Image 1 (spheres, rainbow, N blue to C red):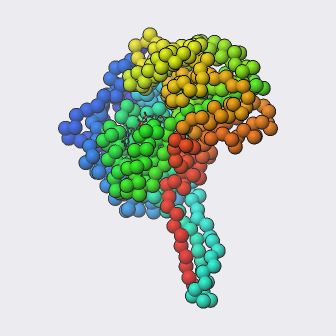
Image 2: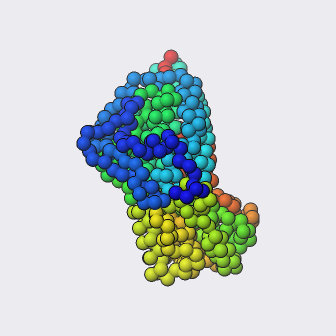
Image 3: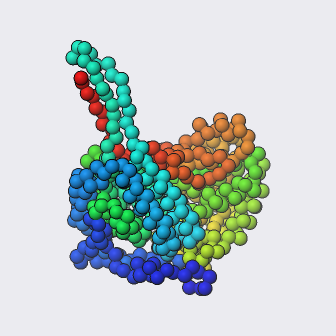
Amino acid sequence: MTTEHTAVLSQVAEFVERTHGSFIDGQPFKPNGSGSMHVFNPASGEALSCYQPASAEDVDRAVNSAYRAFRSGVWSKLAPNVRERTLLTFATLVEEHGEELAQLEALNQGKSINVARGIDVGASVDYMRYMAGWTTKIEGQTLEVSIPVPQGASFNAYTRREPAGVVAGIVPWNFPMMIALWKVMPALACGCSVVIKPADETPLTALRLAELARDAGIPDGIFNVIVGKGAEAGAALVSHPLVNKVSFTGSTAVGKQVGIAALENMTRFTLELGGKNPMLILEDADIEQAVGGAIGGGLLNQGQVCAAASRIYVHKSQYKKFVEALASAVKKMKVGAGMDPSSEITALVSEKQLASVEGYLEAARKEGAVFAAGGEKSELPGYFVNPTVLSDVDQSMTCVQEEIFGPVLSVVPFDSVEDALMKVNDSRYGLTASIWSNDLSRVMKLIPEIEAGTVWVNNHVPVDPNLPFGGFKQSGMGREFGKSAIEGFTELKSVCITY
Ligand code: NAD
């Protein structure tokens, strides 16, 4: 490492040195003789840490621990303000250990230490406090009923929200800690217990979170983590009969398998899946602002963001100007290790993801796209791809149709708003979209026409804990965040009292 890199904290060095296992019933759990899996540092391609993957039997142990803890009422029956205070203590511990967690995330995921500090830790702590607040605000309704019998009787009818039970949280590798907390916090606020399964590539921060949850006073068995392969540990978890709710974030292909497995047991599920998110830049848009938006919204975390802008539709009158300005800005971006705070584009998560992005670049080349910037692997030793701008692409090309999940922006011209709208909605995905214009009347007419769970105007990618997040079409089912998350981790019970 060069001197400009962030110095690794001693507790981080110590943590990665360990051979990890799962975290069950309030303590680390190591299976007997199941072999071990490496965790890599994407900036170097070298092994960073290792863990012993959970078997189906270990998953059963974790789910049973979560089930026992849930049924005992040790968490679900606590006074809401006591649960709230415990969750706020958990948030404070995450904040106090923020630098340690940010370093673990940058080293394991490859991301920029700045992003890890600001988003993975900073935004997560805000989210934790927001969700802790819901603990004391879960409510039902009192309803008027018109039941005719017994004659003359009176009724008191109301609904109450009860915790769903044992929650399985399946997490992807792009924001490992933040997305784990998107599941853990609302589930715990509702009184559920959880078993989290981090992605095979990025298990470290979820394991550290489990330790911090225990230190915050969250009872044993309420927060479990199982580490292991998706097709084994993940599949065993989502099909376990004692799991009452599956909250999955990941690819559409795996999400469908998870939904089908959950349905076998009639387990409730929420799916947050892939995206191929458009930016729609109208002729009156401020091009400088839109270029900044494309970089911020499209290249954050090397484009490994489900909501990332990746197909950019620009009115033909501004097309050339936009492509030139975007390509020029992208060429100046510094590519380097995540632990170097001056790096603007850092490593992709894995060798597999690098090969996948290179495959898409090769397809774009074959299909005739023009590389206005980038288009190749960087010369650095890890999993780096130079930020890429593809121009002269048309709607049918692979780079416009498929989620690349890398630092690749495809820019497509359009003639009229009708033409643009058709292209924007011509996707199997519908997670997010953005419109760039100051023409209020056109913007307001476009918003209802766009098939996406979130539409931003003159911005792309900010999310807020209070604003529901999820997808139309093949981008998922259900919503996370806000009141929607609380509804997702509770069952609705109707009560009718005759008197
Ligand atoms: P993935 O679908 O390959 O894996 C996601 C998780 O599922 C991992 O923990 C994996 O181990 C597990 N898994 C794999 N097979 C399983 C099975 N049969 N049963 C249960 N679990 C299984 O996704 P990924 O490559 O980790 O993440 C990238 C994808 O996630 C992209 O498509 C991206 O768009 C999507 N994503 C969506 C959101 C969102 O909120 N919509 C957020 C982040 C990422």
